[in-house]
Image (cartoon, rainbow, N blue to C red):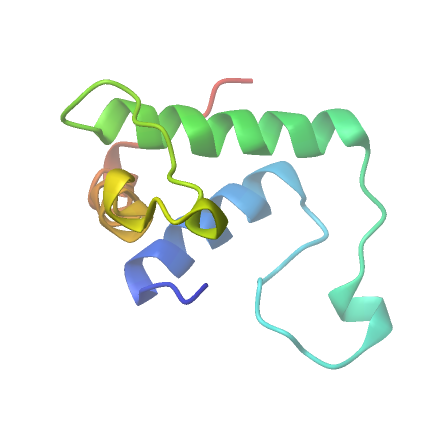
Length: 97
């Protein structure tokens, strides 16, 4: 999946907040820079924050992602568009800790 610059910036902001040893989400081709030991509860908190931010920026109730393997391509929603909305709200991000 490819992402926009705004989405990458938002994801990096969330990652840096919850994983202080992670300075960037860019691949740096170094095990000590690309792999981090992280507690599962930190991962859960980061995923919850990203989910909540996406939910808050959605115009409609939480949609169901289509199963592309089942041939439901036209029944889903545009994940990238929802991430763009989330990125637009990034300046208003308040982390729930």
